Length: 318
View 1 (tube, rainbow, N blue to C red):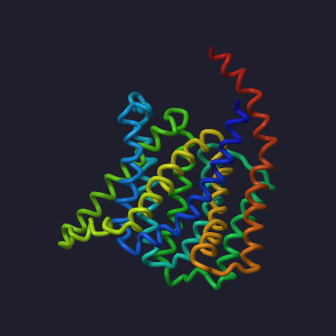
View 2: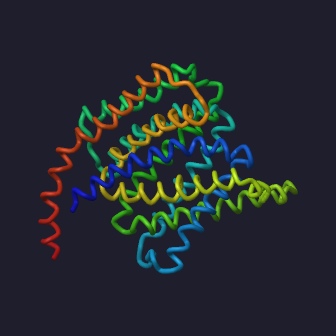
View 3: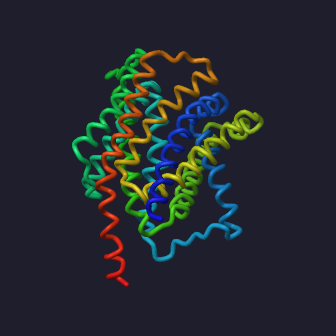
């Protein structure tokens, strides 16, 4: 049963990477109709409202009584609030390519933070595989002619902080799975994200006298479709999946799957936008995949040895 849950966690990790990879395409489309904060507002409105339906009918049980709410609020401040806020303002001062390069370092940051706060350990070969996947992403961007411009230091710092925010979320969410179900964590995160971005967006429109512009994007079917994908699929589904994954595997092992989204975004660009796929795309993609597989397979023997002691501790408690 435990092995089945572990297999599902890995399947969901790959699915998450695919969803996030396509989210870049839908984000581009959405930003053509609305500003960043309005897009985030409608994105989290969709995710929160859709999840509120099964909660309201009692199909999904939610209870926060007697649970560490402060830690859950801290989690939401890292993701979605911290991550998306830092990303939006970071991209105002830096390029999307710089954002892609810096985001690739998230697994490294996660590995470091997880080792400090969760005492997660990785072997030398696992560390090398994580760096291999990071190198694969950086290789693709550099070969495309992208680089990090140090004159954009404000944007670079903000985008690097998104790595820390997401790494912090991964580590804290893993520890909170002992107290909350994946649905409880996800519902709180979506609700806080929706409320916060709604207040910020409306405040901006009221102060600028542009309230009419707030609802204007909803007249576009393309924007509504993009917002639904970003909100329901790329936010709600991935958050539920991530919280489940973190209840089964280490944060450092999960985070490396994020680099697979680069491969998916390349494929989406080629299929839907006619972007060219070159030899260095294939080389970089092979490095990413090798890094992801190596990180998780090299840790499988060590992880397999842990469950043998778990039943003893449980029976002792009983």
